[in-house]
Length: 360
Image 1 (cartoon, rainbow, N blue to C red):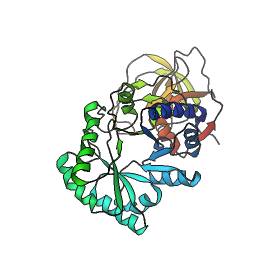
Image 2 (image 1 turned 90 degrees about the vertical axis):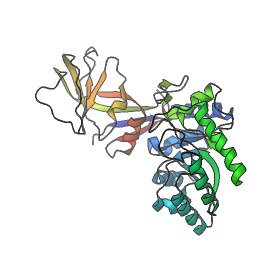
Image 3 (image 1 turned 30 degrees about the vertical axis):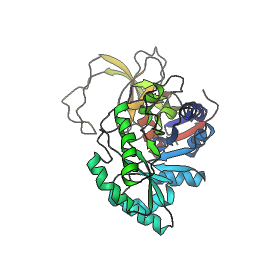
Image 4 (image 1 turned 135 degrees about the vertical axis):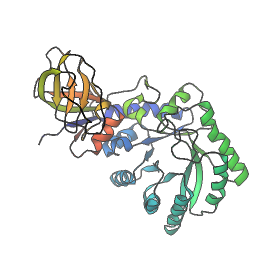
């Protein structure tokens, strides 16, 4: 039965992983490879292992459980602050977890004690992106003694998240906050904090430029290894593969049509009112895949001259006016994938995933 295809080249992932691992290791920084962007598929994890990666991270306990079941012995960090109802599973499946709220930390501590364990945690510090984390020294002084009163957890590190909700870029100033708060907590409360997790792919630029505080010794990275890209920093990483993931869908219609819809317009399927630039009559290919399969805006056609126009739930629309007659009904169009495209495709029940190792 027909299905759009996500093709994964694991050789390129191994090469990206090895390059980044060696770069970071040479600067005293440990990598945790974030696997959430591809639903923690074992083939990709094995490719990262072949590139020297030994630590992994995911936001979903279901992914962590599946990965550890498929590949026993993996070390996993849970990188979404957990729900209270997940406490038992956090202790069971995660080797360490990011934490922010004392009520959840208490629940994890209690679950760890019931399991006869002490669970390591990294306390998140909000340095300005305004997503998760303790905000300011007053909140830190409030939570620190309460963590000390939780015998089932051990505070081993501080972490921060930037470049997500608020799109705040990492800087010398905001990463230095982790160093200062580590010293403060160790001195005032007697903690033995050794891990400072300074963010994700977007923090690599500071490391490359020699500006990352030397005390920052941990990063949670996915995008750089998977796509050789730093979306937050609007750059591709030199010397890395950007094409380890390709999405393919078959052309089911090829017709010349106006570029602006005709008639009174309402809202689209998402409730938005989109704008349509008038480019005249253009040749358009419709492919048998849509928003239920993939994030269309994170697709780039590999055929020169082709350009994404948009999508509905079941159809991708591609401008092929400038493709010199190279597109025909029944052809498979090929697209390079960005982060959200792979995230959606690996969670869709309608996409076939194929793994290749020989490269392109």
